[in-house]
Image 1: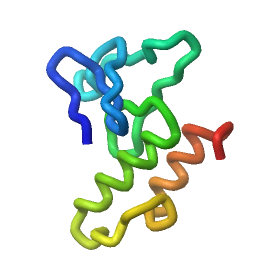
Image 2 (image 1 turned 30 degrees about the horizontal axis):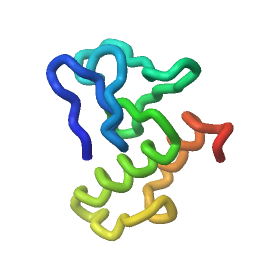
Image 3 (image 1 turned 90 degrees about the horizontal axis):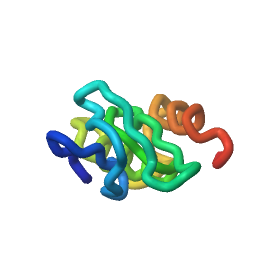
Image 4 (image 1 turned 135 degrees about the vertical axis):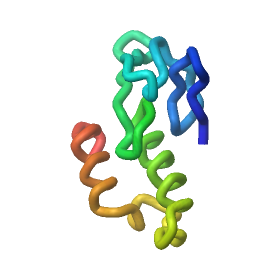
Amino acid sequence: MHNCTDTQAVCRGCGLKLRGSPSWKGGLAYHPDPGGIVRTCHYGGWVCSRRCDINACVELEGTMPGCGGVNGYERLSPYAKESIQRHWPEAA
């Protein structure tokens, strides 16, 4: 998992450096490429694509007590799946 620094927004799924503030500071982040999209992961932090959103959720749920068997999208909680579908409807 990629963590935000004190000054740089970072995609939680792939580590891409974004323009803007880290999510924990409550600011906004923008994709460095024109037309790129940045959304919030279900568990917090910025993600730059549906794949990154899934990867971040899988990694986070895999560390939660009682959720150790999460190793892919199919095993994610229904709440995380719903959040991903809502944030990335065009990719579903």
